[in-house]
Image (cartoon, rainbow, N blue to C red; front, side):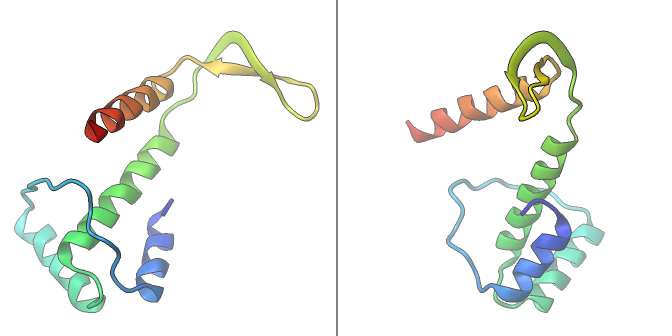
Length: 108
């Protein structure tokens, strides 16, 4: 899911998915815990853990989309009109590289 609206639409139409690959302990405020429990009651086909995992994945997608693009000097491609596309020298490439690194590490 790329945004929360898509996530809610998916919850409306889906039963539960397969379990997640990794398990983390998360401390929530009483208010956030109550909201999570309320969502699990509203969407009984999904556990609190599944809902929390979906929310984290969606939030991370939105964060990645919001990372600032910083145009470098190096042309890395041309668009369909022949205009240059410049490398991103902001934090997005580092974020993507670190994500790949940790993903590879989890497969070993």
